[in-house]
Structure formats: C-alpha cells, structure tokens
Length: 331
Ligand SMILES: *[C@@H]1O[C@H](CO)[C@@H](O)[C@H](O)[C@H]1NC(C)=O
Ligand SMILES: *[C@@H]1O[C@H](CO)[C@@H](O)[C@H](O)[C@H]1NC(C)=O
Ligand SMILES: *[C@@H]1O[C@H](CO)[C@@H](O)[C@H](O)[C@H]1NC(C)=O
Ligand SMILES: *[C@@H]1O[C@H](CO)[C@@H](O)[C@H](O)[C@H]1NC(C)=O
Ligand SMILES: *[C@@H]1O[C@H](CO)[C@@H](O)[C@H](O)[C@H]1NC(C)=O
Image (cartoon, rainbow, N blue to C red; front, side, top):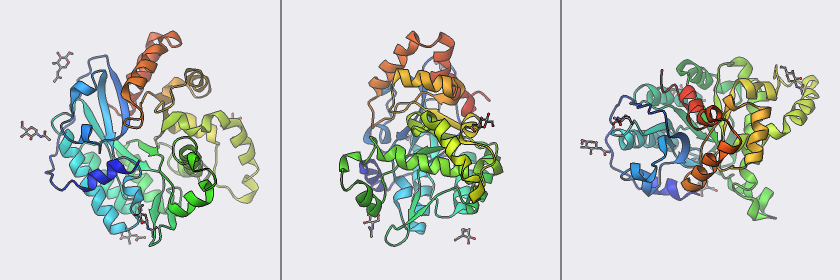
C-alpha cells in the first residue's frame, strides 16, 4: 500500500506547467475518480491505450500520501512538490486526465492556500485527503478536519466550490497494534478502512461542519464506507447525544443527501448498488474503480453489466453524468 508513495519520493525532476483544462465531451466513455497516479503506468508515459473506455481519469496521490508525513514542514513541501509533478505529468493530456490536489493538513490556512493554488493555477478539480493527518514526533497526534480550526479550510473549499474526496488510510502504528494485533487480516480494505474513515465522516456531520458550510461537497468512496446501510441506527442513536452538547443541527441522512457523494470504487455489488439507489439516490453516486488496488477490467465488466438493472439514462448518469456535473466539466 505504501509502495506508490515511496516511488514518488524518488522523483526529483519536474517542471511546472500551468494549463487550461480541455474537455472533449464525446457523449460516451466513463469518468472515474481514481487514487494512485504514483505508479509507473500512470507516472511515466500515461498511456491512453491502457484506459480505452475512459473519457477522464481524475488522478491523485496514493494513500497515505501527505497524511502519512508527521513533520509539518516536510509535509507542506512534499504536497507542493506532488501537485507540481502531477500537473506536469498531465499537462499534455488534460482531455483524458484531471487531478485532485494532495495537501498537508497540519495547518488549515496553509492547506487552504495550497488548495487555491492547485485549483486556480494548476487546474485541479478538487482535493483528495487520505483520512486524518498524522502528526507529532511519535506519530501520536491525529488531526481530524471537523474542528473549528479547520473552518478557514472549509471556507476556501466553499469559495472555490470544489469537491473534497475522503480516501482511507492505514492507521498509525499504535492504533494498528491495539486494534488489529489479534487479527492482522482486518488491516486495510476488508475492515479497517471503512471503520476508520466512516468515523471521520460522521465526525464532520456531528461537529457541525455541514451546518457552518452548507454548500460543501464531500466524496466518499467504496459506496459510502458503509454509512448508508446504517442511516436509521446512526440517526436514532445520535439523537440521544443532543443533550450532551452535540452541535449537529440536522442528521447524517440529511447531510448525505445534501453534502455527500459516494463512488462505487472497489465495491461492485449490484444488489448493494440498488439499495443505495433507493436509499440515497443515483444523483449522489459516481462510478469509480479503485485503480490500482482494483483492476480496471473488473470495474468495466461490472458497470457495463448494470444495463440489466438500470435504465440507459441512469447508467449513463452513473458512468459519467454525475461526474460531469460534480466536476463542472461542461461549465
Ligand atoms: C473529440 O472527439 C471527437 C469525436 O470523438 C474526435 O473526432 C476529436 O478528435 C476529439 N478531439 C480531441 C482533441 O480529442
Ligand atoms: C508535452 O509536450 C511537449 C511538446 O510536445 C513536450 O516537449 C513535453 O515533453 C511533453 N510533456 C510531457 C510531460 O509529456
Ligand atoms: C498556520 O500557518 C499560518 C500561515 O503560515 C500561520 O500564521 C499560523 O500561525 C499557523 N497556525 C498554526 C496553528 O501553526
Ligand atoms: C512515523 O510514521 C512514519 C511513516 O508514516 C514512519 O516512517 C516512522 O517510523 C514513524 N515514527 C515512529 C516514531 O513511529
Ligand atoms: C433526519 O432528518 C430528516 C429531515 O431533515 C427527517 O425527515 C428524518 O426523520 C430524520 N431521521 C431520523 C432517524 O431522525
């Protein structure tokens, strides 16, 4: 899981090019929001041939990327470097590749400034954070973005009107050992990712981030990291926290319908998609794969088979329409 990022650290040569986004809406193909551009296939000569069925791939830095760097100065410098390299890599192919910025989240105003640069100067579509920012000499401080200090960041996200993708990360060492020492197989996508990231998302809800910033657009992969299946239980139980001072004004279900989007990345379960369609609605769901953690053909085969359960219009919206709207490709 760390390999893509380590490869990135070996990169020393780049030149920044500021570019305009070019989008050729052919009416077909899929748009996917993927994670890891720091793998040789995508890092070197980005080959269109490898992704024939995709109109656009939105690339970003593999987990944990900058969120795995505890030192604030190193993290800040590396985020700028990562964004510059990625901008350069896709500068000749912005009709096929877009990017989400990597950010150091140690300091909310510095994160806001780098996001502004990435969006306005590099043409990025938004940002991808790999869950919490680790910090501290012993990696023993975890920074979550649901505290008032982060309002300056959320204000910038709102002003730029770009989405923020919350991608999972491996936990820092002490947590990994305490929680999963008994059954290390739970580390990663089978259990740990959804468990950790869903807490961060519900943290944003319960700490009132969406009340203070009602226009935020947050993307969660893997069909919402399991939250939508538990909407009723989460909301019912959270009502009991109101007397204890929980600041949330609405409820998690409502924020999901208003502020959250989910992708199908790494979760190609047709019956579950149908449940999500009923519970959340197709206007909040975007097709994605999870490359390179999931192979592209498994996504392609699955999504094309959905013509048995979705209408033509619904399928087209899932594969591209929802992303065109969210990323404002045609605006
Ligand atoms: C845009 O799409 C059309 C139709 O597929 C194609 O003929 C044209 O070459 C494309 N332009 C670019 C710049 O890719
Ligand atoms: C982009 O195209 C220019 C001109 O053809 C070329 O010099 C440059 O190396 C290309 N950049 C990348 C990253 O492929
Ligand atoms: C965050 O960065 C800004 C600008 O560099 C600085 O003024 C501020 O003191 C920093 N905040 C913290 C908590 O370190
Ligand atoms: C902190 O985390 C980094 C990478 O995430 C690791 O390389 C380093 O060894 C860790 N430091 C401690 C003291 O555990
Ligand atoms: C959540 O809020 C919506 C309206 O905002 C309401 O209709 C719904 O009943 C609430 N859900 C629960 C479980 O309280």
